[in-house]
Image (spheres, rainbow, N blue to C red):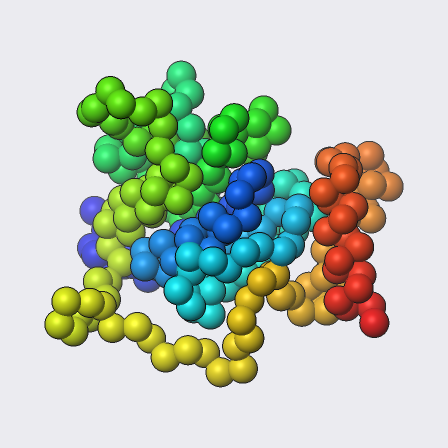
Length: 226
């Protein structure tokens, strides 16, 4: 059995943001991500977000952008990462059972409709959050994310942050960080992503074109081709 030191050195967690309707939820997700040791927030499709609710935490978590779920899937699989859908499906396991095996990316569904069929296709397994009261059918996406990420951090053996008084100590803000409202990427990363996308298109793979993706592509062109 792995000791706690080995576990926390080996495992990372990610959050995939794809079909969240309320963009201000991304800011709150970033706050939970920093609290529970998430390595990266992965934005798929739209690249902009509302940082409301982040309380400055967007400066303390890495963001990465992909045009499509398939590109995000390839990136995560290159890192030997499981993709876990947070959804009540027939074979979903309760999150408190900690059914994790390695580094994991969590894909949360749309606030109203949950995970789409396309999103479910890229998931390796599913977890759900047990409820014990009868007053609501589901939780807010940011509340659900917090519960899931906390359970993963406990399983992975992440080190608890040092406390001071009645709060946890916040790390120093990284140098040269601007206030984030979109996912910044290097020109090299964007070029690599476009090359992959072109190769996929030429071979008829992963055709996920749509209005949101086209809009995101135009934004990327404006940011990195000027």
